[in-house]
Image 1 (tube, rainbow, N blue to C red):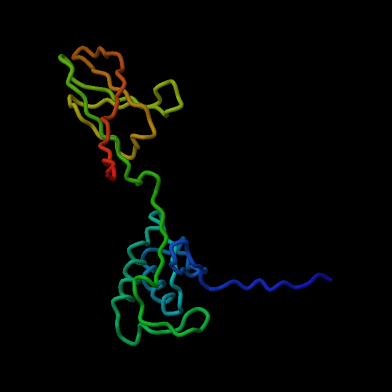
Image 2: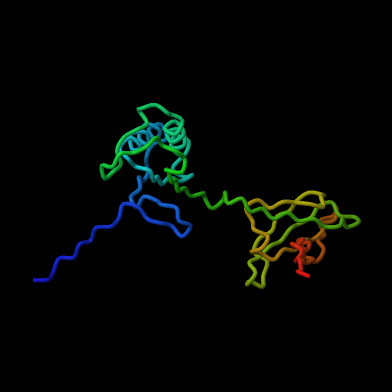
Length: 191
């Protein structure tokens, strides 16, 4: 027979910044939004301090309300025992970990471009492609403007171009769009 190895792990992990986080968390996948607040309140009362949710679960508001309510309570109802039976002090924000995920379309990266107007243009078409691709993969025709924002398109991940469209529908060659130089932080030299 083999030997038995003790596989117990500590209840909490120490992160690189010294913060302690519970190893065990409470997942909220498929928890209906109307039930999330009550369920998380119950889980907090049972000692859970780590919660996992996501925008696509549609229950983040209930999770936040339950945690906010528990932190806001300064009365005896906020005291209890942790998952391993230790006594728990009044709950603070530092005691709770919430992990959440955003949907790919909601990362918040937008590409805003500006260009000089072309005489005779009635519209413009923006083109973009992945940096490693030689052919334009995407395009969008826009009105007679000299600035446009492509939502959820990171300007650092694509190559962009702009063409002008005349009143009779003729389109100019695509001019490469070069984003303005970003202002850097000046380096201070020691004397």
